[in-house]
Length: 371
Image (cartoon, rainbow, N blue to C red; front, side, top):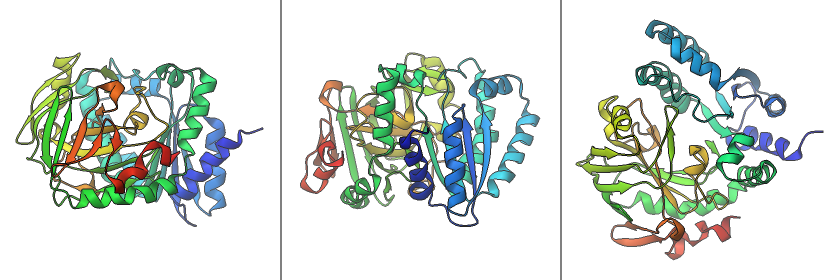
């Protein structure tokens, strides 16, 4: 007998997140072995009159591919998958695996080719910009371990997060989106952080279950050359299969001029992949009430209650500051008191302190109103 929470999740993804319409082609991209969820998604797409297509893969197989792939092979791989993606109106990705660091020993040159030749044209340019898409993780013992929880407790947490009433959250986001649309100067202050930039004229976008599950953020981008100062992130982050910690970035006229971490050499190699990798493509404020602590999974961590992320690399088309890169690396700073606290100012007005919104029009984004 199926877990009814699984059926509800599939319904939410198909009906709410990508709103499948009759005759639409939907690619269901399963990374892992979540057979029951795949079946639920196929059934739900078909119920709506859509045409489901399924791709299954495994991170360990991808690792072996990347270890041996040539540039010519990646170009053909990209061409084939790009042509398929062009036939799709919808995309649902379910990602799971036993080891988040599966790609850690893939040579950096190979990962760079993968990002530039495959991920950028197939996903950043075609899928992100031209399909209705949603991406989610699926709970397993590895994720529970990262969250320092039992497998059963993590499953309960997962379905609370993913089956949240995102339509109510969507309405509560309106005042923050409107405020960001009319804001010029942003200042972020936290331990090891004093950062200023402008978001004037960029616009803001709500994320309430339409692109990522879990969700809960409003994002924009800084004016490309306006970023000044230093930010110290306090959540770990996986990039190219490697976990980075204690990341500190210093900016001058928008550009990262100094970057340090637990692996300073490797992080600078990442930022040197192209010119845009040293500029910021996204600034977002996170507030999912059920996500309280980092678990080294960015789909969860970037939505942490009382967090923000400040993202080197590619800007999104909806909030485009002109930055272009094969990189889009969401790095998270949590500002709740147990993580050192902090403030966000919009045009010199304090709007969030220690992770809680403090002006009346934003109070409904505090956790007690969203659960």
